[in-house]
View 1 (cartoon, helix red, strand yellow):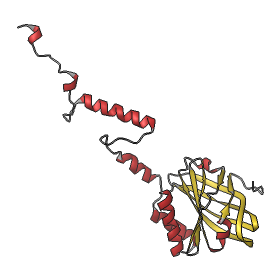
View 2 (cartoon, one colour):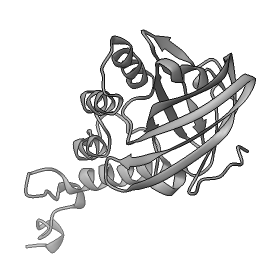
View 3 (cartoon, helix red, strand yellow):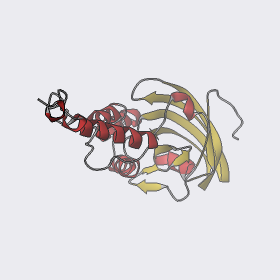
View 4 (cartoon, helix red, strand yellow):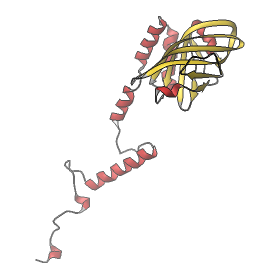
Length: 220
């Protein structure tokens, strides 16, 4: 028999199959494309499949709306329709937070004022620590006030990333039923302080807030 007419002992690469009967070449090509898209930070094209494990991990690192509402209610010592509404709005605008700060602050203003605060940062995946903040603010009334503040924190990569200046987002104040929320943002991290009642003035209009590791009287 002529050897050129015989069948090859090993099938061509396009014919190789894995244990599931799928062509190995097609699978290798798909995995290669998946790696390129992931490295480039691009959205995966249809056909490469979803990544349910990553989605589950993301949920494990963030707080759901019910647990945030319970934590805020326990912290303020009361629940109101306004509190539920501002938390609902925060989840609609920003998604699920991966940390929050339970704190208190005091401020005073005659149009332009100052405020100081301190609280505890808690991250969903563990970690945190004490946080102190200060900054100038613009209020709508006179005098001073003290209040609790519950701050939702979004996309915080690590606890130490909180220690920086966060400018206020113009026009972000949302007020309903005795509760208010506004946004501060820097380097992809968003803070959403929530206040009830008397504390609303302090968050009405904010230039920036400087979050620090240690307490200071310097508001800047």
